[in-house]
Length: 98
Image 1 (cartoon, rainbow, N blue to C red):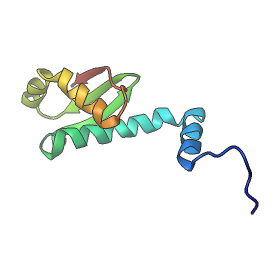
Image 2: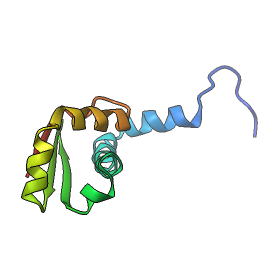
Image 3: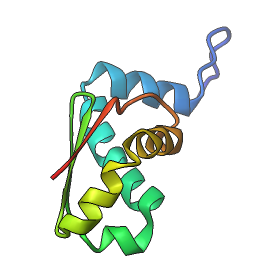
């Protein structure tokens, strides 16, 4: 196979372009947000987590414990900051605990 001179792109750059142009980014963000929730919050909180959904810039989390939901309500800003750090981008602006 002959090498082309000039334009050199890494495979990572090509995949990023493909994902953003093919509207796959939205779906990948949903999966990444759920993974980040479980990673940041740990096993203790994950076992009470029923559902995690990203809709736009809002993360909806359904919890099975009303006591835990009340406790987490006090630290929403910190949770959002930690999730965005884990995602390495400002994806989540609002957190809704149900």
